Length: 339
Ligand code: PEP
Ligand code: MN
Image: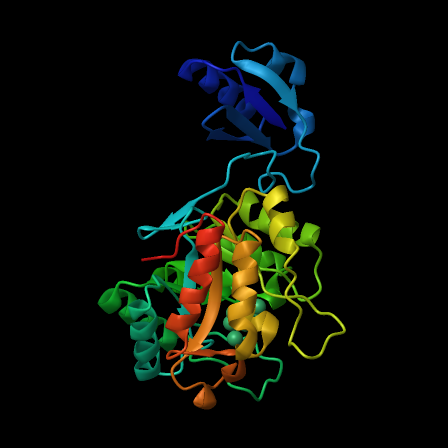
């Protein structure tokens, strides 16, 4: 349920509404917009006495949230959500751009890449230590040891660090070392994992599943948010189609569609969508033009030697010029590049 608060209602009146919702066993979420304050009541709506709520002084109207995803919906929170992490804002005017390798391979490799992406102006660093590989015989990631390398990058270079978690048993340790956790495409509907990352107080990048619908994607975001963690960043990373020239097909329409359905920041991963580095720049520009709030890009100093996804990794040498090209599109659509 959404409770629209009367313009000019006092703090006490808002508090009275919250107390009424909580007394019914639901959670109240107050979002103060520039125009309006809206209170979302989340839980078993049958327990709410709408007539009594409507009778409160501060209430203008009570409306049901029609969508099956509640907290994630635009109705619940009409304004864009901006997530601040370690001084970086995700979802604001400035684009959030992550650069970094697919996988953490060694301290030397990670630092070479981190220094290069930092020099290119990027503030957010990506790198996986637990790898979801199609083959059990492929490199599975450095594991916990890799977390320490990522933390060193944060401490020495001041970059904001993210990594993927696949297993609920790794959420706690990963959250101890990194700033942002990522739930990968293959785990978009791992509901136990979603609930677990919903309990931490750190942003979570949630990627769409390989063959999931936008509604399913948003329901997965809802799983995280329903546990109390509202810092969810949605990442479009391509979907499975019949096309074989690219690894997946970047669903560019998902960007404006998601923007209309949810208040959460939307970023795009052109690297896993494309599977080839030659079109990452073009897809990134398209994503920004379509309204994406950021990009998650795989960058490597020696892609020919990468343990994973070298073919789709932009080289550290090419990365600055690619960002410059993206910057022109950003400017045209009223966004700024990180600086
Ligand atoms: C990744 O970003 O490292 C990754 C494995 O991507 P995805 O989950 O989108 O396949
Ligand atoms: Mn990868």
